[in-house]
Image 1 (tube, rainbow, N blue to C red):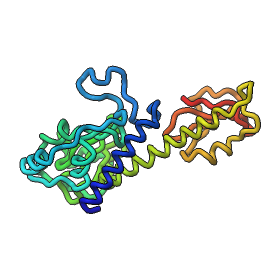
Image 2 (cartoon, rainbow, N blue to C red; image 1 turned 60 degrees about the horizontal axis):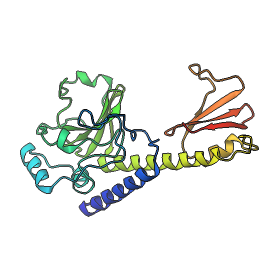
Image 3 (cartoon, rainbow, N blue to C red; image 1 turned 90 degrees about the horizontal axis):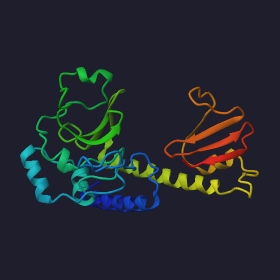
Image 4 (cartoon, one colour; image 1 turned 180 degrees about the horizontal axis):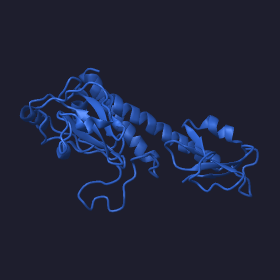
Length: 264
């Protein structure tokens, strides 16, 4: 995308986030819900709550580029100018530019172009305290894993995941964000569909004639069943079905008839 396309894209994403905030009132999407007393340490904990930070002034960006001697990747620069300094987004949200990026030194380039093995921490370019050069911390994946943005290197604007499985290459920042928006829309719509089915009870609270396949055809999220789950105490004669990315479960009998639908 050229600069005009990037700006239009981030305006669209910001409007989508406003819609998500209204529709996902219970914050069912992963990374959206904040913990109690989230601001006690001066920053949000546990989730982004679909909030956005103020945009970054152009002069601040110019000062950063002059000081760090690197040009901001176009997709990230226009994000800061149009969307905001951080806020709602992938994982637990995009971290504040002013807090985590603005005063960091990215003059040394990131040297790699492909995903790295599990022992990437043994590579000479890795620093135990600073990580890899040329990368900015932009998001918390949870469980001690991080998302980082390539600021200086052969592929500026690329997002990388540092995980227990290795150092994994993702996509350009704008594509990374677009995919999050798609998943979020799918999760919100799927949970609304599940709520629709949960209300289809008779006067006794039962689901006459409702079969699991009817729900699976309507809910677009991937699902998995309790068959073979040894870590859950599933009552005999019941099968639990959960959907990836949304809370709740559908409980059916061995014939696939729906016995109950839990939304939490």
